[in-house]
Length: 323
Image 1 (cartoon, rainbow, N blue to C red):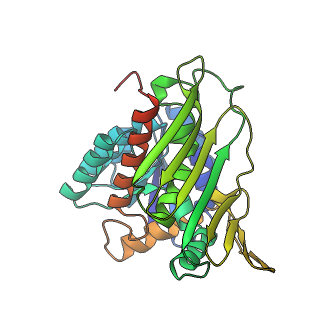
Image 2: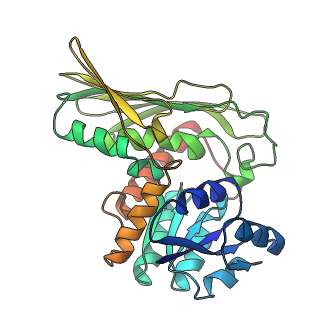
């Protein structure tokens, strides 16, 4: 039985804990929050025997095999590093850090302490995404020429002090949801040779919508993220022999469609829980086989992704007050 600890007791920690309960061989045993009552309430809800009123208490408790960091972006690096220095394996919610120097430091500490570390980019482990990647790689739709992916929802009605609209918490659409379209293009086509990007900003100073073009040797990707309207969230990957559409919401899809000439095939895939189950299973698999990183989403993958996002930020002038 792999024993899990969770740091932070917000929405994503709840979603993750519900999915953890669906995975054989894993159990939530410890919860830490800066508020002990909140930690106790969360622990009681999911049947975890231990609740801690400070993160360090959990890190030094020797109660868990792996810790999931579920706090806002700005704490990811600091808390992951503290957890790993105390000898813990870590799954850190995406983005791993807010810039490349943070992520590089996290990877360095993981290697120095010989612990497992992975960025929780859950879409990478989604069965639909895995299948589509396989189809793209084996040439089912020929040479890829075009990729389109978007992710937007209306978030301007949120609390301006909350993580989405607050620059002090690395708010904005890019790190929160823009990371998904960027990840898809990187997964399918690799690192772009050139990037163009343009952003609009909100009154709090965070970027609120972002359009990006990735240029590759023989392909282009058009990517979008935003907080001032909804978007379709259907991804398209088009090649010389056909097109794959990943059904909305593509980042947590349970199916895809292939179109080749007049032939259209809809493929529905079963999805267990919300979809965090698959990244949990990957962590279990890595821990059981003694791996310190995942082959599906490696340290280098996380470094590449944040490097691309840093480049987009530079082009659009996104700077956080704490940097």
